[in-house]
Amino acid sequence: MSDLLSSIALPRDVVERLLKAALDARQHSHAPYSKYHVGAAVLDEHGRIHAGCNIENAAYPQGWCAETNALGHMIMGGGRIARAVMVTGAGSEIITPCGGCRQKLREFAQPQDLIVIAGDASGVRAHWTLEQLLPASFGPDHLKN
Image 1: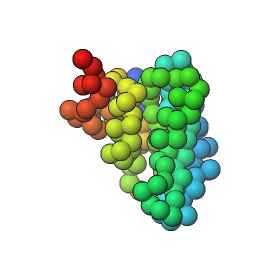
Image 2: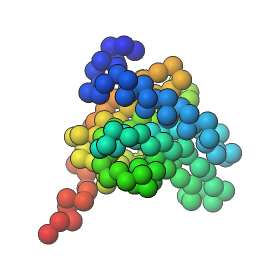
Image 3: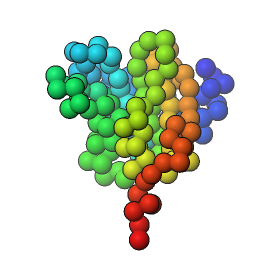
């Protein structure tokens, strides 16, 4: 894992704080249907970390992903640019943001600049740029006159 941490373009302590915040948020997840608890943490342009968890709803499409909640906390906290996001889940498969969350992250970051990190209780498992996860994306720049 230390090789993986050293390959992330963020200070080790920031990655560790993101992981802790996402794992802590995961403990508050409301996932009575899927039983898949997710925590996320977003690093904003001011160096602050904003966390969120998934919140499911009996009307399935009405639930909120952890990344959505973390972005909401970032906006409420005065942040406008996401620099990194940590997503945590359980199981043998590496968790990544769903398609909808990738697009939500795109709203607040340039794809080549946003670092997306996957983790779990064992630590960091993988990382990408948003551009790698959402190639040829549509974003706010497309709507400028």
